[in-house]
Amino acid sequence: MFMAHNINQLPEDVVEKIAAGEVIERPASVLKELIENALDARATRISITIEEAGFGLIKIRDNGAGIAAEDLPLAIKRYATSKIRNAADLFSISSMGFRGEALASIAAVSRMKITSAVDQSGLGATLSCNGGTVSATAPASHTQGTSIEIRDLFFNVPARKKFMKSHRSERNALLRLVEQLAAAAPSTHFSLQLEGKKSIDTPVAKSLHVRISQIAGTEFGKHLIRSQYAQPGIDCTIYLTPPEMGSAKPRFQILYVNLRRVDSPAVIAAVREAHGAFTSGELKPAFFCFIDIEPRRIDVNVHPTKKNVKFENERLVYKVAYQAARNGLAQLMGHSGDTARTYATPPESSASIAKRPLAIHETPTEEAAYRTARLVSDDTGARQTGFAFPATPDSGKKQLDSPQDNRVQLAGNVQDEVAGLISCYQIHERYVLAPIKNGILLIDQRAAHERILYEQALENLTKGQSESQQLLFPIVLELTPAEKNVAASAQRYFVSFGYEIRDFGGTSVAISAIPSFMKDSAAADAVRTTINTLLDEGDMNRIAEPAHRFSAAFARGAAIRAGQKLETEEMNALLNNLFSTENPYIGPDGRPTVVRISLDELSRRFLR
Ligand code: ADP
Ligand code: MG
Image (tube, rainbow, N blue to C red; front, side):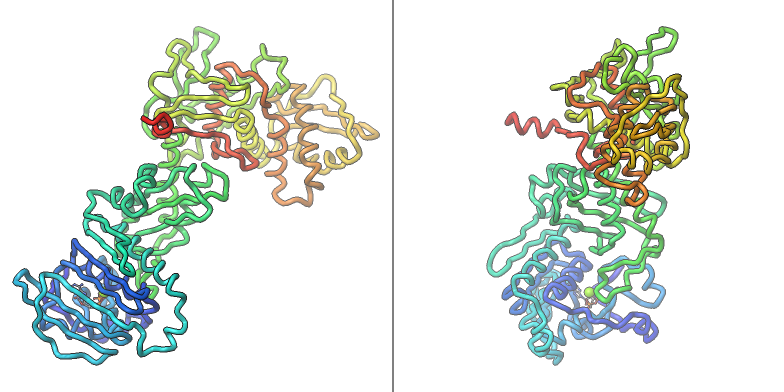
């Protein structure tokens, strides 16, 4: 806890421990130090005035603790700080500024005037400093708090001024800075007057969410997902945009550690990674991520302006940010973390098997295999793709980190109690419509099935040979010479998938065994389509990531098509299996599998 009345000179050894460095690079770095000082002084009101992109004037007034008259000269002295006493303190810092050199550095390169008062008597003191030459302290009238005016920044450092970017980019940097600092301080009213224009005005907000809306816009705030994830000693709360609001260059991707604005590529990567599972690669989320961590687990002193933090355990930070983002998105997209209803299994034909809804990851393998087999059941033999996929026996393992991932929460009124199925609707023999708790899902049946098959295939390939069944009569495929070449180079992939494919003379091949979970006709069809898909890519031995390519090609060959009619059981199985996959929201080729429309969105469209 720091007090307004005692500013101490740091002992020499502490001075040694603080890496020397320039704090003041540009107007925005001046303003950052000044705002952080005001926040450290517990100000609830901070008004900022900027002229000439900060080169002419930076003025900040706060209603914080103030600086006592006798402390004013010390405040602008290098290594004078009220926030640190000895070297040990350095490692458990929670206030923002602690280096005790910001004001001194700024004073050295500008004309500075500080006026401050520590109580409501109306009487305070003022002090001016002109490029490092300090005036005498004089009494001045001021309400409690501090006003600092910085004029003619870098007036005595012409070289620095020359290297500054345009006024426009400086103004932009100043604006961003205030946005970012204000976003994390909802109980402080910020206002920014930029070149005579009121640019920011954020009255005290009752939550971070409200404050973020003040900064980024109410419409933006309305869509934000809030999600939290904690591990011992670390806690992450993230506000991020839903997948449909992603953009190539989001304006906000901001991280705070203990409410201090910092950069961490690991956290950005984690959030993007989590978001990437729900949308195709180019779209990135906007987010405000708040990490709370024990101060001794970070080193904030690695950079003179303290923008980069070093985490003791960066992987843990990555994980926590990833899980927070992922859980929030998964919940929004229809997965649910609680024990609410889940997609039910298709009805058992035998009355001896009790009907009960099952969460997918709890499903025993056999039963899952049965369920999935129903996707293309025998009575639909006319279908072009007689393909059923077994449940992945260890499909539960990837849920260990977030056990809720595999569940789909349904709207309360859609469960068909009798059949134990949820009511899905097939639209244009192409899309499946399913109600979820907060809206509806539209699933592209082909893309969804491709995702399921793709993951299945990839797993089979990485696990090695999967079960195969010998055919009584080999199926002979007539191929073109080019197709036959591809078949030969992809041979070992087919083999590890359970196929046996032999040269049958000329340009023919014979299929004598197929994966045990496929039906004959579909299995042969899949071989041909896989070969054709691979044909564009050339020799399997030369392409990058062959297992991925093969699996994608195979999924494409074997997936149900548009135009194929699905029964309710099949749609349920499709949904169940889709949401058992690692990445339910994108097909192997990167196209979306699912479009979600929230009730909010529907209400808006209907002008409710
Ligand atoms: P630091 O913030 O690292 O301590 P600074 O050079 O930024 O160093 O500030 C020096 C000291 O001046 C601070 O420790 C604090 O006691 C005092 N100070 C600066 N700005 C304010 C302010 N707005 N309100 C109250 N005290 C301030
Ligand atoms: Mg400071």
